[in-house]
Image (cartoon, one colour):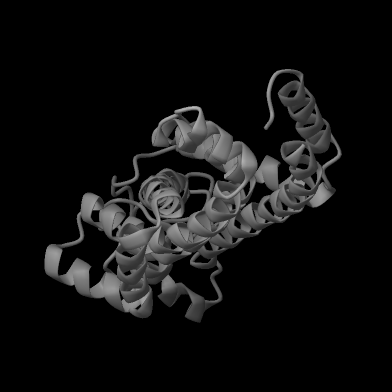
Length: 293
């Protein structure tokens, strides 16, 4: 079990590991930071409103409209900037909810076992057997395509994957001696989860968080491209590709800019996730002998 000076040593090693991170991970972190900055300060950075109609449809790039206008005459650069806030914000909210649902139920399954584990695992199996896109299209068609519904549907779908990895990781920790000692001295279940299990499975969960974010990010873009994701006039990269796809026939790369924004962020997150996975493996190898001692 990590306490006191051992935790300080671990934190210092993690900081040193960040400084020694490969170039790809550093580029990924810089790119993610830039995207987050644009998302947070979109109203300040964007030259125009995301919904304001300024000129004619499909105007060319100019000093007034740096990336031209879309099919309704709205500034493409402004909508691209606001799209970062909307797409990333919704994806992040969905992943956080998915981890709250899947993480808690997964750790409970690992600790309680028995009928609880059996029932929850079978429910997860059923949900995972249904193709995610088909299930989302069905639910969104029935319940509507509001922001709340979109976030909850995606969160429930992704919570099944989070449940699986959390349960598997937590079961490996739950059988260790230090967890058994905590139970014998009378610690409650939630204390054991918070103090013993969660800190020791945090590394793989952080890596999974990055992967889930990529999948959700792309999933929202796909739904928006199909017309069931983020609804107009709200700017979204997936719908921007759909609305301006006709420009490709005229050798205009404007519709590819939202797609490029999606691709760059996805690659950046994957760079960071690869680094976190490497660190989690190294961290597990280093800390498990200390824990067992």
